[in-house]
Each structure stands twice: as C-alpha cells, then as structure tokens.
Image (cartoon, rainbow, N blue to C red):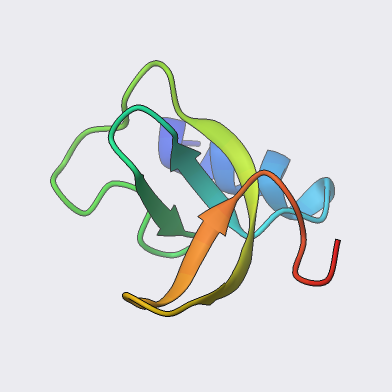
Amino acid sequence: MTVIEIIEKYLKGNGCDGLYNERYECGCKIGDLAPCGEIGTDCKAGYKRPCEEYGWCIGEKKAGD
C-alpha cells in the first residue's frame, strides 16, 4: 500500500471525506488527496460541506453540525 492508500483507507473507515488545513484554508477530497504531489504534515481528517467561494469545502464539522 502507498501512503495515500493508507490515508484514504483510514478516512473512509472513519466516515471522513478528505483532509483540510486551517492554516492554509485548503482541503482535498478522497481520490485527490495530494493534488500537488504532497500532503502537509498539519492536515487533519475532515468532512465535505457546502462552501460559497468554492462550491464545497473540507472542514472539521459535517454539513448541518
């Protein structure tokens, strides 16, 4: 297994939708976790939710929470 596959398995197993980083205000969905070829060491597991600026965001809370 690759590192990305391990992370995706963990996220799916815990009901998460991807990773997010508060410091850089960014997020990435399962299936596209390292769009620039890297994952930051301070990324956290998160949930997809609607976001005006981008259409969707990954954040700490599920939509509706």
